[in-house]
Length: 101
Image (cartoon, rainbow, N blue to C red; front, side):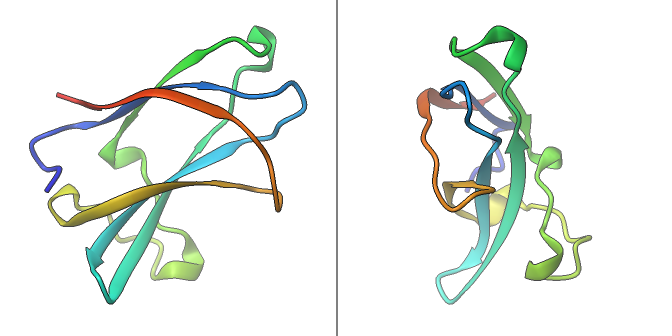
């Protein structure tokens, strides 16, 4: 249950030619997980330095392939998180992942 928090923050660092990284949070039960995405697009002007990212729950969007696309992420039903890439592979570093009070 993440409802007592307003979102997630983290630092991310990506190689020069890396595209966006998507943070996926999941709602639901063990047999009915629903994904909600937030695409992290690093600021290319900052290069490969660590960049801080703040993501509130309302910024996560349900992909159209996973449901109606209008359902909202419910932090009280949170079941976990994952990272994904637009391409089939990629690399990045994440640090200091924490909840926003």
